[in-house]
Image (cartoon, rainbow, N blue to C red; front, side):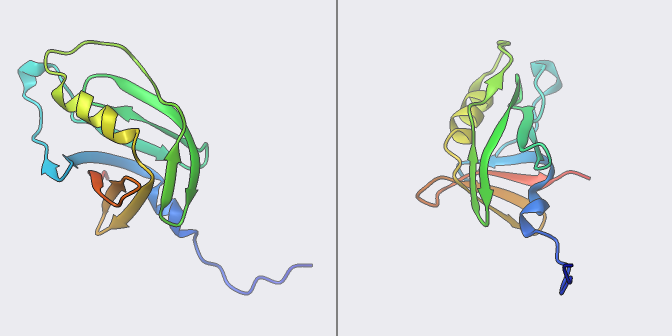
Length: 128
């Protein structure tokens, strides 16, 4: 028999949600214009399946979460669709940044991704 002494949710499950993109490299990103045929980048983190998916604003992407613990986070190789959009500036920056993620933090319904050196790469806000 096992005696349950205390029930506490695992804090890393707070990342399990849908997140809307706000900033990259500390710079706030504006919503795309309707005529650009772009979407606002977003991610969905699914810890049950250990997967991440979303859009970089132009293409959809998906891949495994290799490791998550405390404030450490590592993604596996990400796959993506291969559309070419009119303005690839944000999608290109997004894809470069997401491949450097090694740490994360959640604070005030915001999700922050950082590189190994602690530099903020991206910021998201909770969707709901």
